[in-house]
Image (tube, rainbow, N blue to C red):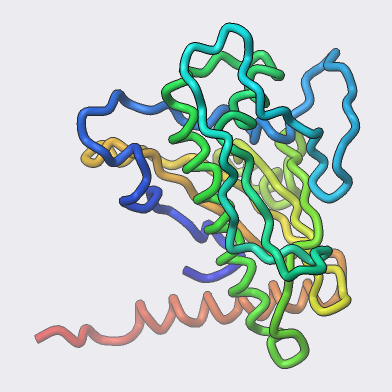
Length: 245
């Protein structure tokens, strides 16, 4: 997979609960991350400026029937503002469920843990793609960190909008991530697309398009360089004779 295109077309890892036998089919995540979406008429709540998310309680809803875990998983994504070298934390299943209920989205309680697994897995994949881009700058910064992020599901990125004009599907979600490249802020755009489900394994498939935003000449040159490199690699793959016996 190369940066700047639909980079991830895979199902969550085998450890994900949706691979376990004798479980009912799990729904796909709702359009846009519920941790970020703000519905019309919703009462404004104080937002964390680092992630544009209001504080979510760990207490269950009064009519909630299934107890949900309140433990939060530590991600592999380093946090730029942390003094103790800590990483970002994902919301607990209870917090995720509370976010869905706060938006008025009806979701089976027994599917929440799987939805959290998918949410976390996609963010890990997105960070892995960011690091592919950042590897090109390892001579000046070997330890980039995530400074802040924001979900923008209702705003198409310029690339997604242009591609939709030619019949391409629109992403179901968009995130903007700002990383700290050793003191320099660099914004990345991440478009999330749904693919055709893996029917054989009964799992959803997703595509992630991760690339630096065109906020600077340096980022534009990175995208141009990767685009040329990818085109050349595909050309060589198509032009070279088969090496099979």
